[in-house]
Image (cartoon, rainbow, N blue to C red; front, side, top):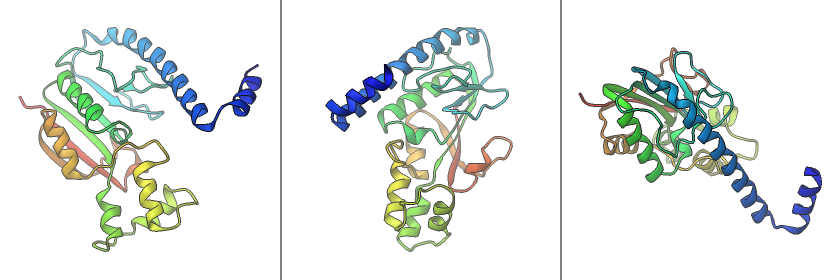
Amino acid sequence: MTHMIKKLARRHLTAAVRNGLHGLIREFQGMRMHRRGVREATRFHNKVDLKLHLGCGTNLKPGFINIDLNDKADLTLDLREPLPLPDNSCVLVYSEHFLEHIEYPGTALSLLRDCYRVMRPGGIFSGGVPDTEWPLLEYAGVRQQGYFKLAKQRWHPEWCVTEMEQINFHFRQGEEHRFAYDFKTLCRILGQAGFVDIRRRAFQPDLDSSKWKEGTLYVDAIKPS
């Protein structure tokens, strides 16, 4: 039956309509998972010093509440919605290669303000995003550090041949990326959310994923006491 429906859809619907329907179905599935995650989050309502891992994918970190819209996560939550956790209940919120997947500034700022809310004073937001300053400076000839060669080897598909094709893929990743960050822009939105003492940091092997060691902009930010 499913095969027949797909066949009829290909015959009678345009590609744009089919893509829109697929997107709508994914959103309904995500809504059901989010509602389940909200119910399950109640078990953490009397906990303190929680550590959150936002947008975990399949990379589950021990000692963290791993959050994403997939069945491997500890909490299946849509991070475009408010976090169903109490104020001042978290000591650390971590995110790696996730912020670039949500809309800027609206959704990103709402999420970071909610991270601020659930953190206790003195808590840390620690995050990493693709470093967009690196490819742009190399494209402009200002600094040569082998971005295009490395990206072609590790991250970019075969159709990325020219430097501009690689720049476009860096920004968009198909349709998955919504925004590209540099340090100044990441500082700005973290500051708007209320964080202070925002600093670039080095890769930390006990926290960060080895596959993102190169090409990632990592920062720490503090909720003031």
